[in-house]
Length: 159
Image (cartoon, rainbow, N blue to C red; front, side, top):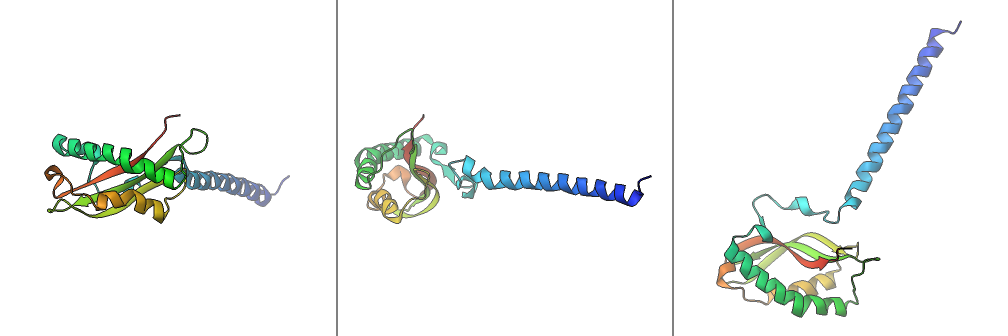
């Protein structure tokens, strides 16, 4: 006959082992979750701030025109300056997300970085300056006066 203390002890050890496995799996999932998404700062923006695609059509059109010229004239030159090239093999994204604020004088008064991905890494201060400097020197159109919205400065590849 097997003593009940030993039998109970084995059940308790088996239950503890099972719980440890569950905790281990949950730990692995929680560690890997931020790595699964490229936009790891996306939830830091308050619900009151519109994203660029949520802007009213007049403001969205004004911003899209600025952004298209910025990509053509400044973004590409920053990539060349820092010897960055997007490829499907190892660098599918080069961008910085930011909430930008345009004041009553149609000038960029500030920005708050909300996300970044430069070939899977954080943006360097020098690259951030290169991307933002043209916007800091720009006089925005009347349609964007007194605006605050989140934008993605840069792009990525669909591989």
